[in-house]
Image 1: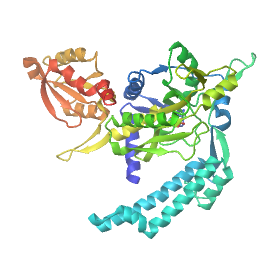
Image 2: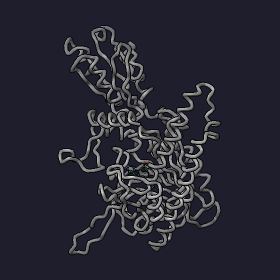
Image 3: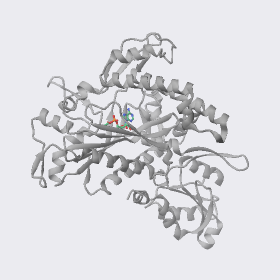
Image 4: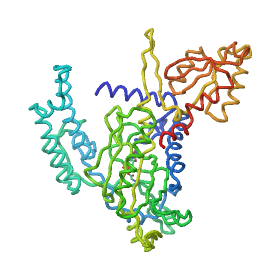
Length: 514
Ligand code: GAP
């Protein structure tokens, strides 16, 4: 674990050093859980968003996009349930004065029990070697069985307390399990209280009578309240979807793990409107499609898993997370929720406006059911960054830090490097840049030795380096160096475009989703 912590620290400092992510307001000592994206970060982020947007709106004839405002009428949040129920259970430790999410303390405790089991299994695997039968060991080893029984009972108790919003029950678990504050090491806990996560602000001047408005905690409600506008103006027929990318804000109690849990973040959400009764079929379909989208990036199928929810949100009748293996364990990157007709019915009730759909095939009016796919851009960014980062040992004892980013997501696609800064090589290199830059994010670099320049491009994940040397002036060929293999091949300048396009185009990624 300590080793993984070190890797994560290195990734965070790499992200800063190479212009991916900076702490917000850094010269004023930063602002907790808020981050800025730098020159390379914004490109990577835009490429992630483009991949998602195109997968939704280009590959599905029945999905269109919108861009709704962050400010919305405050009654929307009353109708959606966020004013009353968008809460986290918080608890304070009286000695350290630190505030925690009670559910997170318990989840961390459960993870520790899982670790104990994993350690027993690893120890036995080492002892028995090839003869080791893990399933049999888990089913028969007394210590593992004891840990597992404890874990299962605790998990059940925890799920029940969460489902029942039983704050005393959560506190009692913390007390019974003797969970201590990670800072003070004591068990001196306060009661558990509910804490609403929405940020509030005032709209309009006080003299005119100002109105309390919220910074949206999810983009989804902007889709729901526009659902009929889009359906009518786009002549959409059920099933159809509306996609949106935009900022969301949550006053997270415990903000941690870099850009994993932020107070200002970005979501990519799609609401898919279906006939009542067909929602679970579509839920299964979207689960499959979304996992395929992730896996197409080639970051390793074993790094993903589904996590079906025990505690359903107030609006859902089925929900799952797609989790990704971060350096700090499997963590949620995307949620897929069957939201029933809760939101549309609530908006109909609170606005007094009819927002039913007339289904011409059934000759029937109804309130559609909704399947939602909701992914955090920043979490996706973090998963890509973590999976890409490698400190590679090279033959000869050298090391290089390289980002093996999926090529279509890389901020810079190719770098053109004149071998020396004279003899007409810079001019020739610029000529090549002037051709490639219309289709690919292209860097030109002439400073430092060529090896150093390769390393700098490796560190930001540039898939190709093109080296212009004296031979280029004679036969119009260059050296094309591939980032991951570091293989260098001699290619004709006129072939560069096709060779690069083949690897870096978003279309090549989208084709995998067919
Ligand atoms: N509309 C449904 C919804 O918002 P959610 O599970 O609360 O569902 C969806 O959030 C996704 O948004 C999460 O899977 C995660 O990727 C991202 N997300 C949520 N809270 C976040 C935070 N504080 N910081 C960064 N990303 C967050």
